[in-house]
Image 1 (cartoon, rainbow, N blue to C red):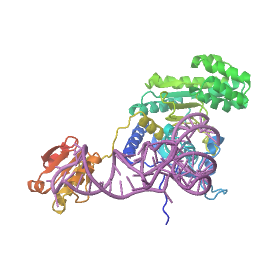
Image 2 (spheres, rainbow, N blue to C red):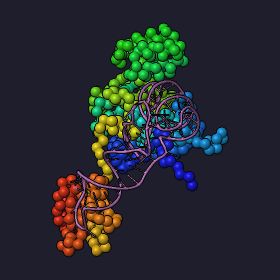
Image 3 (cartoon, chains in turn red, cyan):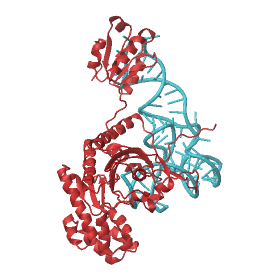
Image 4 (tube, rainbow, N blue to C red):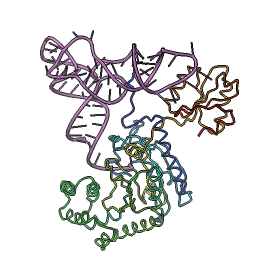
Amino acid sequence: MSKIKPRTFKGARDFLPEDMLHRERILQVMRDIFKKYGFDPVETPAIEYLDVLTGKYGEEADRLIYRLNYKNGTKDEAALHYDLTVPFSRMVAMHPELNLPFRRYQMQPVWRADRPQPHQGRFREFYQCDVDCIGTDSMIVDAELIAITHEILSVLKIPGFLIKINNRKILNGISEYIGAGDQFSDIYTSIDKLDKVTWTEVEAELKEKKVPSSAIEKLHSLISKELTLDALKNELKNIEIAQHGIKEVEEVISYLKILNVPESHYKFDVSLARGLDYYTGTIVETKLPAYPHIGSLNGGGRYNGLIASFGGKDTPAVGISMGLDRIFTAMQQLNLIEEVKTATKVLVGNFGKETLEASLKLVAYLRANNINTEFYPEDAKLKKQFSYCDKKNIPYMCIIGESELQENKISLKKMKDSTQVSLSLEDIAAAIL
RNA sequence: GACAUGUUAGCUCAGCUGGUUAGAGCAUCGGUUUGUGGUACCGAGGGUCAUGGGUUCGAGCCCCAUACGUGUCCCCA
């Protein structure tokens, strides 16, 4: 067999323990908070029929769906899921018996045939951690999802995050107001960039897209004022759809105040657009303004029509997706990741046949006391065993050699400061912190 | 998809205007110590200089092509 150069698929990564221990912790923080807010877990297959996925995300994103080269061109054509929202909506449409309102969380890898940019936290295989609630139009849920975002990022000690809030109805209203007609989405993808480029550049791009200059001017007057919600409300007073959207945002913000989400961490932002086609109301996205190159840490919104598109009942829905890989990338770049190599607390040394039984009994005792314990499996030189323990940053090493066996004691060494004590079995668990 | 930039040991890199047998640090393994790690010293293994072609007496270095990587834009988690 010819040798194959080992490599990972572009945009996909291996994770060694020093990364995985942190990733598992982040997942655990999210899981605990999701449950605390009353959400229960579900899972859907990584693979779906292609037609279940297409036509929901918009033309651009549809091209990024990973199609499997299997039964191509037949009705069995399949693809890897692109996100968790669409498969979840499909699942809901298949389960009309669900007791509404239904709250679920879901944490799984998804795949996108994108150009990876690791520095920005962008990969082809990455974890999404979704929380969604279906079956209610109440803005209380939209606010709760923002509260969840705030709580997770606070527990993870991520500084300076900003949750941007907008509403598709406002965007539709603005489009109507400036008379942009069907160029609405072109305009918004340009405006979405405003936090990175200047208005002049956006203006040039809009002209290139052949947006009428009257529309551009009207848009500029809306954007350049750094409009507050109140000002926007006044400006768009004759646009019914915009008034609906503004009222929803006001409602969400009023609940955020009651839920104690600090105002410094969220902001109404009329330039937030988001590309996915299925959003209908609230849209949110969390960024680190001090690190603009890192993509959004989460994103989401209301998608009231999606479930009905699968033939299910017309069911309102709202959700957000936390990006594990974005959060992890941000934490790495913010130096919030302390170096950890193992979860093991104790290494029990191996001194050969005579002491094997006593050593294994110690191992069993430590494990019975919930202390993560590893036994060195070979009768190697002590130097080698110590070196192994040291390199792996295991905090303690236990030794039972001939002398310890005779005295019925155990030597416990704290690796960090080289202190060593002789203890009996019953005292050993308490001595390990 | 657009633009920029890079590819020399497992990793980070040096390698002069083209000139013998391509180097260093870190990492790995072994030794100095057969019951005690980190430090120090000694030693060992590890390279088709991304691939293919061209120029030249001679190419890691110059030229062309290809592949792959990285960064920014677009879009997103």
